[in-house]
Image (cartoon, rainbow, N blue to C red):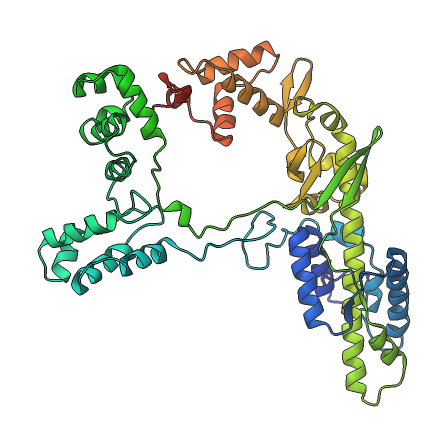
Length: 490
């Protein structure tokens, strides 16, 4: 058989991943606050968009939006626009076609949890100490040394600097540097500029008032003369070394437990994040209602002014082309927002249906659920459901949860299965009710879970415990009580 080369024409239809489609997919995965930011940016960049006034009725706004969309479709048909038909593309179609693609990351490349606001403290630890340095009685050279010390403190308030090198750089004796360091260590907050944990705790204990209190003095002695035993949790040996009663040592332990091992962290510039729910679930009678959080979200529409100008005759063709482009972008944005809201509601309603028992009875009744279940229920692609539930929170009668919280793997429970979150809750209960002097080991937790017909391996218990931030039994042991409160020795 001879090979031949032929040319043939073939006509096919293919949905192109245009910037408009990419924008629509991004909008779907943005949370409430990110949507506010996107809309505010679009209002700044697109002159044909405007915010509806607060005194307009919701019905009027919706009618106006529909009229705007229809007007734009009529106007775009007047020009040669090969992508105009994309305005009619079905969301489910293109999300399914491109659903396998990796979800785009946040605009700055950082995948972060939703936040209500970001609060930064203007008064940093450096500035706070600098103000105290200005009020001190140190001489000029001493101030320079102190400034070098303050500038080399970590966020926790610890000093990580070679004092010998510091003394050499200023051509002074190390004793002079130590004297300046002691001055800085008397600054607020207590414990700042310490070189290790022991020194940090000692500085704080020495600053306690009243200074002549016997228990305060004993706390200083424990830190300075028996810190090795204190760290190992040996109060009886501490009492013997210091020749004090065990009761007094236990009371001093209670004082030490209140000291801050990281005195600088209260000045940390770490972002403070607050969760803002994207969706609300209310119980009305015997049914649950899903409502989107539109608080603070600008309601946008196409400006009547620009729409009328486009409908008329503009003197300059370039201006008309520019206006048509901006109106197409605005219309696509409005369509995308409406479809985003609709899709989020559909997915959330499906989750509520699957997890009805959780909403009625609590976490013990949380069912195993995967993205595929919800995707099949609402006739969407799994990747679409994943985008909808990413970084979004829902406020329910049982508290605020991330939408991803309701998706859990199943663990055998008798003849049925139980959600992994329910198992974590059972582990938390067992640890909460354990004897503080003899905390349950992971193997003992396995045995107690078996009594509830939950059969998992010890390593699984250890993994869940670590995910919940619970230390192992050796570090949960509490050896005594002081002043009505338990003191943990680690």
